[in-house]
Image (cartoon, rainbow, N blue to C red; front, side, top):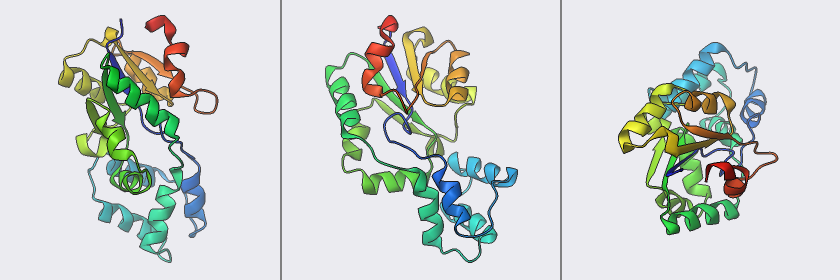
Length: 202
């Protein structure tokens, strides 16, 4: 029996355009997603470097771009947050049948944008028993350590837990810890259909 639901954020609740940032950066000058840039992005996502250091890295590569242009390009990945998904999690929280946890690879600039642009963000956050963002806990998916952290933190049984994420690499990692998963397809599936699609677990 499932007792704990762990949710990703992007492309589970808020819609993403994962190609938008690279496209926006290309408009600002000659840009290539090099291994060094990927490393910088990952460091930022786990809070190892500050927002100021992060932006400076991009300004060094794209010296003609303004700070605002770089931040806007970085946040271009973020789209809309359909209210029916917020209603779903709020209703689920009100029933108190499950422990609800959000576990997201999210950096400071992205969460600042969400706080500013999603009117119901605080109510969304308060629907969860725990709300973990990678830059705050210094861990990111798909590392096995992040799943062990959540399991240990809440003393939950992985066989009584389901993790929902749109990235297969992340759900594959969770499976290795014994957690049930749903690798959702954001183009064809919606979180509000969780209990229908994964009815065999509930």
